[in-house]
Image (cartoon, rainbow, N blue to C red; front, side, top):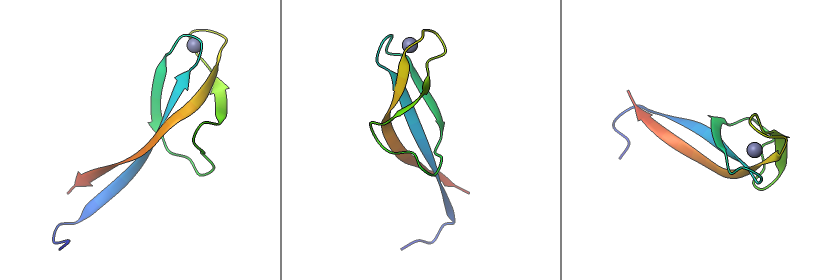
Length: 59
Ligand SMILES: [Zn+2]
């Protein structure tokens, strides 16, 4: 079933509620969906975790 070696990278997408800027970064332990994370770079809004997903990379 799993013949190829695969690596899964988890990503977190943060979205600013004010200017709708989305930022994708590596998932960090403690990231929880829909929680406030950090300040937006382009405005003074607060970014919220909108999505957490994994990408499979085949070697
Ligand atoms: Zn913003």
